[in-house]
Image 1 (cartoon, rainbow, N blue to C red):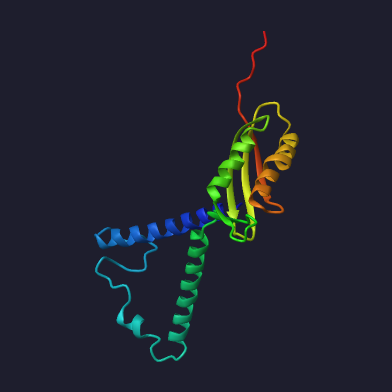
Image 2 (cartoon, helix red, strand yellow; image 1 turned 90 degrees about the horizontal axis):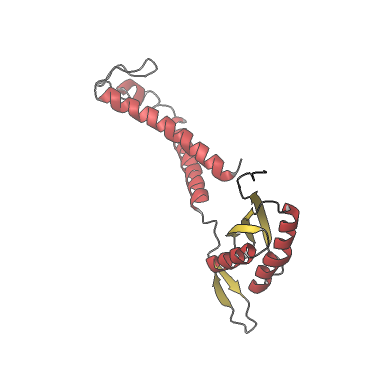
Length: 193
């Protein structure tokens, strides 16, 4: 299971829990009878009674522990948010032109060129390319849709030897790591008469 799938599952679970709790609070607040697992008795019951609010006031450890736990939860939430929102697509590439200046190449332009080069390969019906990573650690994710009766090993070797090598040389890189997923084109069965 990939990190994207794990994020979706976690978000779905958190969303479901919040939806059930929020819906229960709203329903009880509007006058619906509280469920059996509900901690309060009705819509006019307060969330925390005065006794519950002042229960730990005299202990020295209570507030530092509460603040520390909330700070850890906040930091974990911020870390998760930045991990989810971080851009995975490499948008610009610095290409060494040999004159000391360099040129900036858009990541989508390299993706498009690599996809077109891959699609021209014999036996490839369609190619999708995504350039990921950082400027110093680049990699591509490629999906090749193969024609029926094409040997996947041959298609992969041709892609590596031609399209991928051409893209890395064009950008001035010694190599470019790739994750390639191969999928065969679905076709109707041929009728034999």
